[in-house]
Image (cartoon, rainbow, N blue to C red; front, side, top):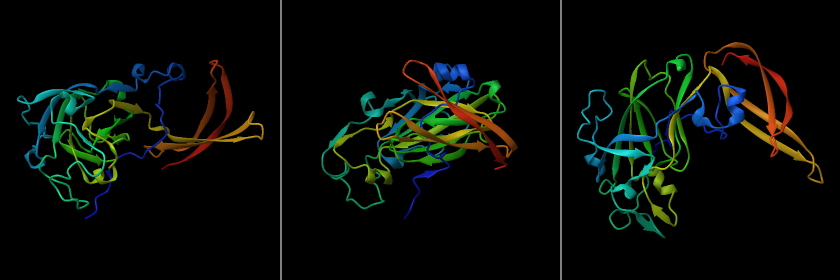
Length: 273
């Protein structure tokens, strides 16, 4: 049995945020950007001890979650009254109840948390590409928007981003996701540690223009004295509307004295893909 580590997850990229203006980027506070919408805070939350007790249709628009608890995001379950933390030095946390048999995982004591939240997308995001960012979810995440399945992600200590542009609508939108205590990816995360579950880092939406930077890579080539260096910057772009033409790209570094260092500029031909 083989299951991918991700379904419809956006490719990993360098750590950055796409601001709406040069001045906003100089400030460097993404929470103040017009392209940012925090999803931190209280979510409707349901927790079950065994995986086969989880609700199967919780992501549907008409689902009644009035009896559910509320849990803050981000938050670790075991530190908020849902299950107990497990410390393991050698072996897997289920070793006393389940024979190790990858990629199979136990059903009993495999806690599952289900989350639901209604949000409203800013009107000014109408012509932008909209992503959701999960900073860290353990051990995995299944995601739905407005009753439709979006995708899946493991690699619990890494970010997971999904393009929601085709799933969102004007007005209210429902985001729902489910997290398992253990998944097949847990076999690759065995180490001397506390096993805890839930949302470890920030969750937010961000918007991008239809042509935007998606990733970049710096290469520095220092001289023998390590005083001077040639800098090569590779940049990769998304072109969601398959626009053809040229864009101008320029780059600057800001040093510790808040002074700008020009790295140069160039034109890039958009191929329509």
